Length: 71
Length: 71
DNA sequence: TATATTTTTATTGTTTTTCGATAAATTTAT
DNA sequence: ATAAATTTATCGAAAAACAATAAAAATATA
Image 1: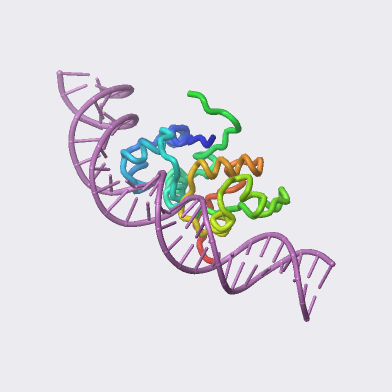
Image 2: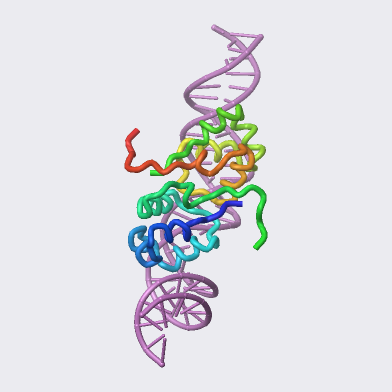
């Protein structure tokens, strides 16, 4: 499965959802959905904006976890 | 911008579009579009399938390239 | 060169999903 | 308690994935 580690990166940057929402330009609600692994896909433009806002790489946000599912 | 490095990974694995298309379960045409940076988004299910098929990580496929555009 | 294989491009249609806008509920901090 | 931050939930619209298909173009091979 693909894991979203947005929360980790936000913590590292001490950035709140509000701030990130502003910088990325997507609504608070939708960003929350993405952060909590409720989204089924992502636009590259959004991923790009997130990486730019958090000054990080794709792999800081998205992770392929072999097998794994539970929770 | 977000770069797709599918071609690099396919080369490393000596895997053709045909083979990858089979394993991933999306059509040849659409995989080609993705490979050539014509897609605007990607479903996590697809990204997952690609990582599994190529036995690689997300960062082997997707890369955030600061700035950059041209070409 | 001729032929086969692989890849790219294009089109149409269906289904899915993002994302905005909004509001309420919930959680966490003050 | 109160305020702030986050999550959850609808609804709708616009966008995009992806299938199916076919044809064109590029590449490899005999």
